Length: 79
Image (cartoon, rainbow, N blue to C red; front, side, top):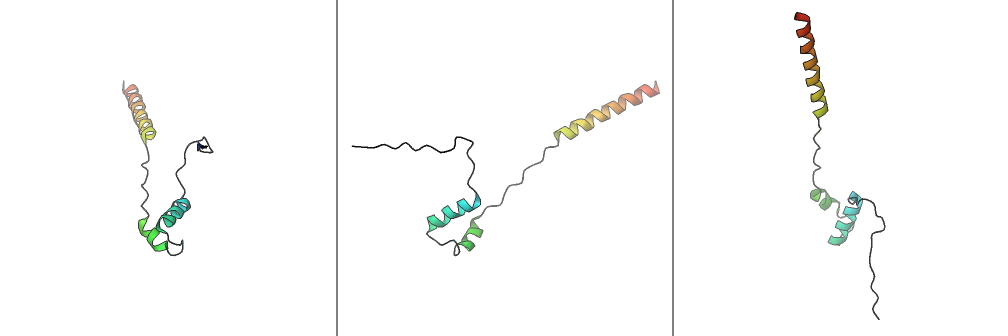
């Protein structure tokens, strides 16, 4: 008699990437190394985080609009 088990994730929310400690635990387990001894290896393995670019679209648009208004005002004054 065969019993099939369907494994389903407990949460149905968005999948979160594993935390650093979880990643490290898995890394140690895969190596078969104790957490304390692995410290040096882990430091070498860790990747640098990529910096996010800030978006300045809104500010630029506002600046442009301001310039346009200023120009119009100036034109009105001279005529």
